Length: 192
Image (cartoon, rainbow, N blue to C red):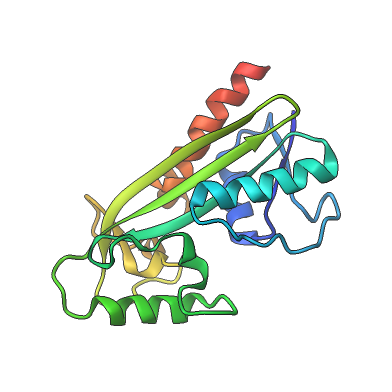
């Protein structure tokens, strides 16, 4: 089975390929020679995942999926949420995003947060959504060099390391993306 992953984000592509079984061949946008930027203009993670999946399905007519992920911080009323990638403005800058988030949290003790991923799967007959999340806390400083995005400041519940201090394998066992991908894989296995 071949499936297009509607993203140019190489970090996400690497994680997705590590999570999907070899029986499912993942094609990137580069593989299908689609190099236009897909604007994420939605107001929710579901909206943005759908925009990307619909765009690629309309171009190729092939089964595809897209994801959108966000960090939701309790003290900040769910921010940065759908704006996570561009929290500190354009262009997207992971370090600036983390700096602004830590500044906005200040010295508050309420550092509860969760990562969410929403996957939109689209083919000729259906459009389905799969959601994964992981709860945790925001640290007071950046720790670790692995991963991407907010990984250096997010510690999952029950762990003492940030995502950025974990190996890719350790993160991929528990992450929000893994939880959503697991649901997608169960669905795809039913199609075979």
